[in-house]
Amino acid sequence: MSADSGAATVRPARAADYPAVVGLLEAARLPTAGLSPSLGDFLVAGVGDSLVGAVGLEVYGGAALLRSAVVAPEERGHGLGAVLLERLLQHARNRGVRDLYLLTTTAEGWFPRFGFARIGRETVPAALHASAEFKGACPDSAVAMHASLG
Image (tube, rainbow, N blue to C red; front, side, top):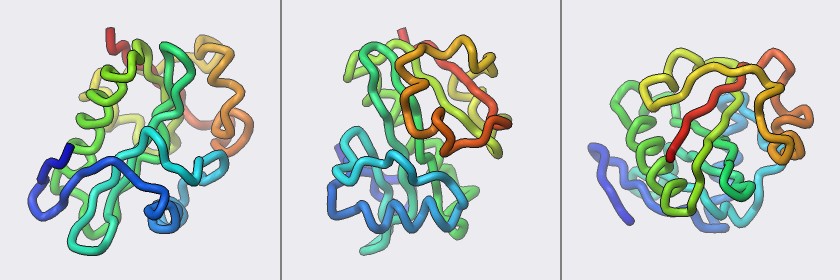
């Protein structure tokens, strides 16, 4: 499951990647609350020995929460975020996810190209409201979005 985006290689995350993923998220001022140290259902992008991107899922049956989509500032604008997200969408489909949700405060305009549309938070399944992101890691001002993968 390795793919190249220029010099970056995308692969499934490992538990050993946790400190680097947390570092990327903190540098981008994105929430780390609820992030599983195992990084199951996460993909990372690396250049040499450095991780420069990550994205993951929290799966709740047929629905999932997309979280922690981040690319290091020096790698932005080259399509790496799109590669990570496309690979994650395929991973979600392979896991049987039919509906993918996310919260964002900064990237509402970026996600529609991948099939996401803005929705009211009240339409998000109750199971996802138990996630750290819905319980306060993301502010109430964060926009909820949905994509159907079915």
